[in-house]
Length: 107
Image (cartoon, one colour):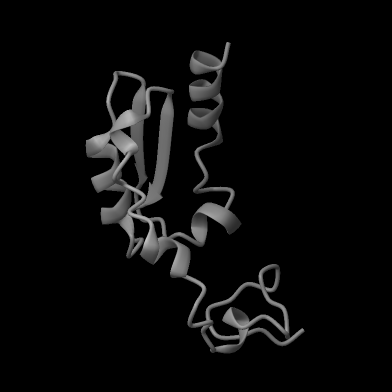
């Protein structure tokens, strides 16, 4: 199967706009119209945020994390990981930390 540049075979589809070098101009409209971080300080539930160190959007998680209240929050930045690594590279995915977070916070 032919895949687009920097795409995995698992995530590729010939009719997908994002798989073929195009972009859907109105795909981000809901995010543009809703300031999603505006209410993040109201979250009181346990939160585990996992981000790759090399991700271009890492600042977004860091900003959101700063606004969260409570002591049951964790920002886990995976060293030398890109966003794709956290989907496709089992060696980079922190399964043990995820399991520990769930064991400690979901009762």
